[in-house]
Image (cartoon, rainbow, N blue to C red):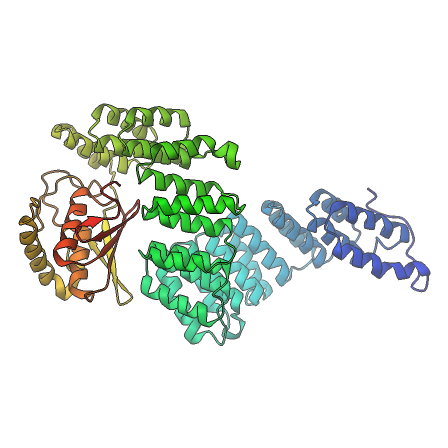
Length: 604
């Protein structure tokens, strides 16, 4: 392609001159390379390709259709280049997922004598965001400050987004705080909310949303902000605040927004309110694959396998094609309901039926499914067949190791444990499970050796904790520590003693007192059998809830790890004794306790 046309420029009064605005208009509307190239040829023929404005329009058109080689050839052949030329090509590189080329162009621009403008710095910040490179982003920030562009609303918002994606949330907040109040628009507020949400800082996102509502200068939350804060409530299991945000959604007229609806389905399900999730879903007129997947995963976490299969069949009948997450949700439901053959059939047929190739998560779910059912040899063979690596392999073999421990198969546990240890990644969970597998088999010396090895290597597992929300305030409990109960601490212990007495009348033989001996079922905690660890965290949270949550209201407890079998039995007994309902969300699923039984039917 000729990059330096030699044709003379047509005079303003010539008939050809009338073609120029038409051709420029065609360029602006062109979306494919063939159209752009054809219009380029007409501009050359008419003698309009050389002027800077025409070249910039051509450059933008080539970048818009992703033809970066053509764009670069044109750029290199331009006699004159202004800030628009440089910034347009930079933007094209950034949009084409070539951020390093964009940053190289920024450096070359500095040497050319052309001064960057606000759009240039915004584009450069976006390129740094793609690279998640805070160091390079700070250099762009410094240049923007020197050029006097850092306070521009577009530049500041781009810098904010860049810092957030690079993990520099404090830097992002500093940029946000430095913006003049009138410059903070819906985009900048939304970017700061997303920064907190993306970095799992849900409480900060919720506080910022409250600040927006009270000191936002009249900025109304849009659907993006509302979906973000709903997702933050989901991650923190903040049901009370989530309901308030849902109210704001309805008042602002976003009740039928699909993005927000999906976030609400997820929020209610993660807060232990599946019924509300289903109500939100049922109001959606034409559910998409994302919406269907959200409610299927929610139902799976609650062990409602009939609902899962019904929803899945409905989805397929409606012509909505399931994705890999949808199928994983169905397999999860099969795993936690003992529908092993159904789940395995789905694994083997998902490629041919739905065009979805099984990924490591599907194999891990299938191994977990077989392990829960006690079909450990099959699980072991499938784990070897999966041929996964890295963190995926760690998750898969940890799942099998847990099943081997549950079913007291020390032979297979040893082999699975070796696979975990060879992974050279985060092996703390596997070591704890291996220790408890030895305990279950009566090999206390081997268990002690594993624990000793962990101490020598400085390996520590995150402690198990549970939390409960009361009047929008979360109370977090750790095993044996009741300080979070504050003034209620003594009453919590008295209540536990009273409940223990009543439970013994029903055959319970454990301990709920302040010096209960661990039975080593709670492999999440850091100590093994025979060590005085106190009451497990979910029991403390439950006792606190019984004291402060009004009668008639469901008590919802969240736990960061798997609920142990002894605590599961305690929750069942207490729900029958005091005739109240409890919902517990652990690492794997939800348990709904009512009148002495659990929704999981003791299969989890």
